[in-house]
Image (cartoon, rainbow, N blue to C red; front, side):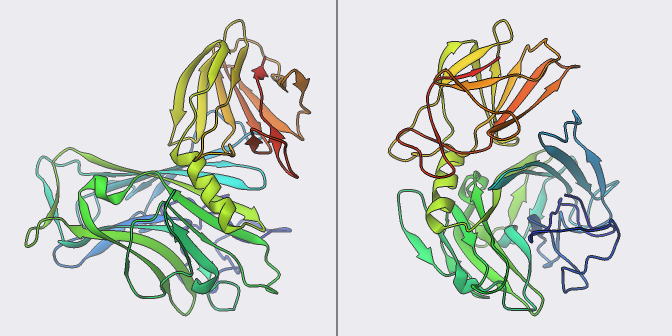
Length: 373
């Protein structure tokens, strides 16, 4: 996980299984002189100037604490100093969690730091490209192999190529072509609906060029004839979950989105529950005597908990925590991974398989009271 030097503010990762690589400015897996990233935002000025988080120059820092065995965190600021040509500062915070599927949690902040509002175009003032950087110079990726949908509503097979289509989906997905040699499918779930940011007439599009394919959402101003305005000193925040998993199905993409967009409020036995972070993709607890015990809940909408990532505050031990479900100990390094931040006294745990309320299938864990201690 890293960034292409000299290009792009948003963090990026290989879409393909990588057997080996060296760090350098040349990324031969992307057949384009301007390789794109996993996701990025754009703002459009009334003069049709598009600029956003993939535009350089930028600065990038690693997010603490440094716990590479558990997750990687990066934050990119675009531009490095000052504001972009539309007057904004873009900040992209990304956390990457290992596993199959692997999770990439993004927070986009578009800030107007000035004392005056910034007027944008009445058409497509904000764009969010939720899946990007897919090489299109071969037959691996095609819009027909993707889809989108709304939770509890309709699902559509196939993405509209180079043609904006009305819609405000909760999730997207795309799979590689059969016979391509690639098994990783990609999905994205949007925790921020653009209508809440003041946009109307929402549309989606798979933008397909000679070298890449990307999937985005945008809208226009809800008041005809008026420019979209970002007030002085305000920040627009957008949350996104991306998933990379082998042999991803459309049903799994919808299930992952349902979990992220309907976070749990678990039943507590020991310790207290502090909430779910959309920007980190994890649940936070406060331990009692270095221990928490809680039971995940499910609903008709959520029958599988994929984001079983937990942070336990007040953890004073320096040893890695142990984890059990229903009194049965799990195996560290196989069924879960863990890390301890001894400076801030936080224990981190990620289960390596999703939780289900009934009999588990292959690659699932049967839910029950979870104890981290």
